[in-house]
Image (cartoon, rainbow, N blue to C red; front, side):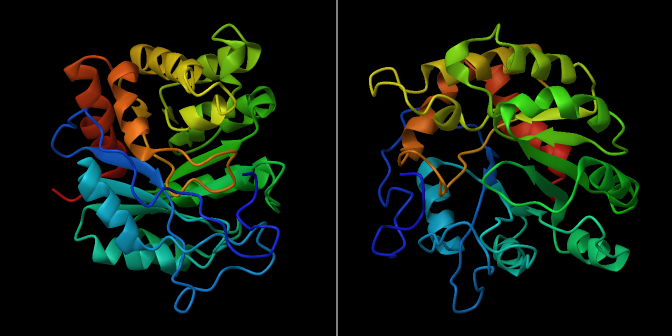
Length: 299
């Protein structure tokens, strides 16, 4: 499944209605730091020019998933399916009673007043994509020019890029005036192992204490493995990141898994945490303390 629309033009499901129940018990306050919500489109229409049309995945379905998995807090990332109309995430934040926050999509020339409004609505950062399948109008210099204005409203920069772009983007991103969060382990090809140049460049970039990384996407960076071995390569890289940068990693399911090769089981993704952060201290740091420090959930 590489598109969210079937050949007949009907939206295809990208998430399991009933994921497996994980055996791993998560610590109190555990945070899913990367999800999306889609629709309902009667209230929140999809953006014109979107790359696909996904099945609706509204906040109520997300909340139910988190209750089943034992996840108490969450960061919802605005999707390109809804473009820069962030109301769908704002609505979910408002319904989340302080346990849900967000990351917005904006243009690089977004007015200061809108940034301030988004911050007050519970947005903790803005995301920019540098991916082949996602059209973007903002170059890295325009994004960097925005970062002083992000600093003024207490927001950080989140970046999503093709793995090979880590070499090109590393130097300019270090001029950011705010913390930078890298999505999905830099989208490296986990099957190439930890010595691959893209992963080594990611490790080098993370030596800068301003940078953070999401150890999400083990199902994306190792998506073509045989079912018996699926995600093992991704888990290995995530474990290296957690061990080397324990205070600057966060984790997320990436529900409802848009633009994917298959439909991941969210229960399996939770159980993988037992191998990514194999002791209680690292698990609590990854799921509780780091998200609290980065996203500043109300206490």
